[in-house]
Amino acid sequence: MLSVTENQLHGILPPDLGLRLPNLEGFYVSRNWFTGPIPVSLANASFFQKLYLPDNDFTGGVPMNLGTLQYLNIFVIGGNQLGTGKEDDLNFINSLSNCSYLENFEFGNNSFNGMLPNSIANLSTRLNRLVIGFNHLYGSIPEGIGNLVSLTQLTMDHNNFIGTIPVSMGRLHRLQMLDLSSNRFSGQIPTSIGNFTELNELYLQENSLLGNIPPSLGNCQKLIALNLSQNNLNGTIPKQLLSLSSLSISLNLARNFLIGPLPMEVGGLIY
Image 1 (cartoon, one colour):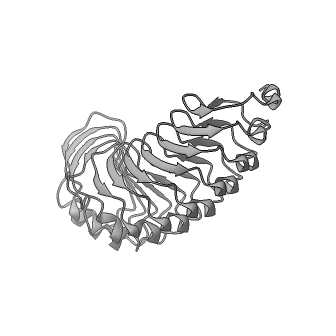
Image 2 (image 1 turned 90 degrees about the vertical axis):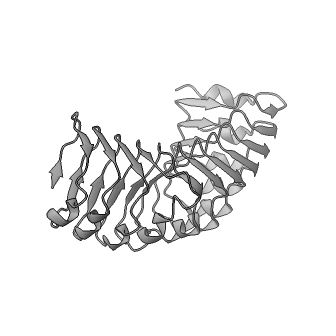
Image 3 (image 1 turned 60 degrees about the vertical axis):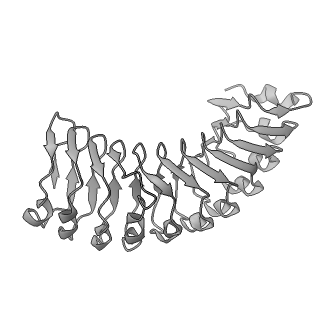
């Protein structure tokens, strides 16, 4: 294991790093000033389990050969300047489908472009964190996202995704946090969202969602924060939602087209 986390180191990583240190299992360089590309040679360290590179200034594309790291468990590259601006920026995800132990995959806060490939559905069923917010991604979310049944956190905020929220997301029963805010999603909020019985936080604000707020949200008995503001939602506020005694942090329904009286159940939100 090699860790130099939280220093002021700079420069590029040696291109032959994976060749010189072939037995690396953990590599942690977060919160430094490293620049340049992620070395392709890292794939030579075949015992890699944890590759943690966030909060630097790495640039360029992600190596396409990291799928050879069959024991890879954590791959975190968020908070850099990665991406080429081309539509194939996310092609590296195709190879990661071979990493059957992958549990944590984060590439948010970068400059990745393009559409989310269908191969996202082939990632490990052990995956519990997928963080891809604050990029330049567009297109619709593949229906296969519902295959990632172990997800507890899915954040895709601040991109340019369009289309409807896939119904298949209702299969993600273990979700504790879902953030799809600041995109261009349209259509209705799926009633299957009521399947998220472990959900603590739900953020769908700043989209173009329409229709009613689904009463099935009342099934989310662990929900503490909900933001549906700045959409095109209409109809009344369902009493099932305001009956959630767990809603103790925030409830934001502002800037929609809701009508009718405020349900009396709002008086139960005393925490």
